[in-house]
Image (tube, rainbow, N blue to C red; front, side, top):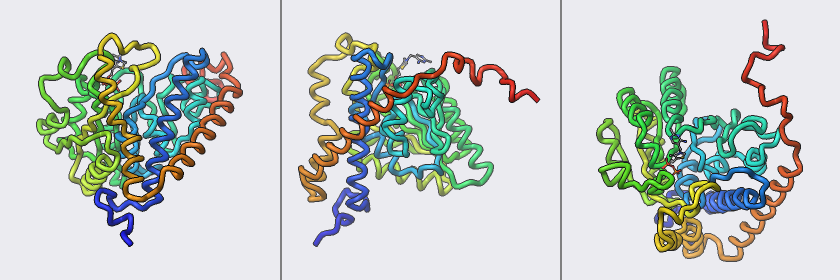
Length: 337
Ligand SMILES: Cc1ncc(C[n+]2csc(CCOP(=O)(O)OP(=O)(O)O)c2C)c(N)n1
């Protein structure tokens, strides 16, 4: 009998790991959809989600070591947060600004993930500003000689910022243990890639900073995982950074405040729906006999239940006290020495 490990493309993953990968992707899809639904119901004031980008997010996160490596995500990274260990409840508490929200007690923007125990670092709403933070963390790990890798995530629009170029340059010079992950979804809100850069690929830019840039099919979770594993090895072996360009597409508007019909055709969106990473991976799983359709349906049913429970819990949880708005802004009484 052929073992799962021998299936070409399975990258040495076991059946359990492959199904866990599928589960994280499907969970990310379900949480994103729930957040957008809660927004339409008037319950969550703002939703920014990543439907369509799950393979890019989960494929990279699967190569990282939760609690050991540093994760510096951007707002679309529901799949990264869930793979590293956050739960739908964590994310929905933040989405609805509840006091129990771990990322800031209901006072942070939704999707600005933060979880100290998982080493997920909260980011600013300003595009690209998390990238120098990631490089600083990687520099600290290197100076302290710690076995830690930092992975930072961003969209193609972030690569147009000075923060991005300066971070790439510094990381290249100092050969830092950092992985730059661009989720190339072709738009910075309404601005298409061709109006952001005169080069075809983000990956090609790494050459100017002295380290490899790899462009990968970002809707193929196993291809992304393989590239991320190599980047991890390079970082851990002291060989320095890697830039990964995961070519993908966001299947939903930029945020709940966006009308994407104004800048991209329905035909283009429909074409990308045919490459949906979730459908693609489930077809691969069935084709290689890793699980059958009913097994995947059972995973989906459990996810639906988990998301319903998390959503109900978050809706019933108390909102942050108004007085807490000033916490961590001014010195608090007990902090005065
Ligand atoms: C410095 C800065 N400029 C503009 C904005 C407004 N803004 C928010 S998201 C975004 C687009 C970012 O696009 P990209 O980096 O490609 O990520 P995507 O949203 O496509 O995943 C912009 C311009 C901002 N938040 N920060």
